[in-house]
Length: 408
Image (cartoon, rainbow, N blue to C red; front, side, top):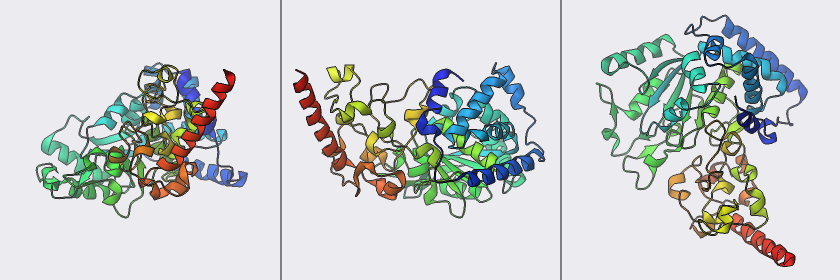
């Protein structure tokens, strides 16, 4: 793993451990994780692929692998003492079968997974974990593919993780979206495959909150997985696309503990979505100083000033992309000069995806303003914190102007 990737994962924000949980809690958790891993070691691997062989083939040293395990331990908000357990969990990922289905989507999350960085996350997931079914990647097609799915659901009943990519149409247009020779609707297909899963992981904003298919006027009545599936643990990993690091984090947590990670009120893992973009943004100091890009190409843009006035939705968006980043941790949207569009939040396309400040939008701010935590925002984050952030921005701008006048 390159130094930039490690730097991003070892950021103080990403490495913090919940101080409300004492030493005794982590000792007990450590024992439970050890027991879980011992149980997995006694299971017959779903496939015979060895992580050591893959990493060797990819030129990844044991030392680099342990660095990666240490970084992931920090990302999962676990003490550093858990690093050996996380490394063991990664080597036992071939004990966990995965079924991946695609519904109303652009396959962007599959693309993100396949183009992820090293140590090759796509190899870890696709070669170490037994990916029993994935329409985009598998060689089988037609009746053969359907048969493979049915066999996997029966063979690994109650054990497999179901990854769902894409929204589910349930409105008048649902008959436009069918799958297989039997003509199942996407809704019927999802319910069938989810029935015997151990947990359901919705990947990407379409699968979590409906995403672009659910944008007005939503002709197919598209919704997210949590609006359809009942009686199963559900994890939402939104963003457009979802970051592969967060997918790996959820799977590793399941392998390590046998449970899904701690979630916020929108069913997002707190280790990934417990942070506000605004609080970890490299341009936050410019916001506090009242230094903003006023129009594209101006001096503020050239000096990487805050993008709030250009429509950045960082103040009301919870995600770790400012920490983990994309493309081998090289960059992320704000670093590239474009404001956050809030793609990990519900209704982002209708409410956030435009280049104007939230203060100019006809959207009511949630009580408490932007300084609330992710849980305090909760389901109320269906709206935006435009008023509170606008006041802060205006005050900061005045103070910044005064400081500059004083310097002159």
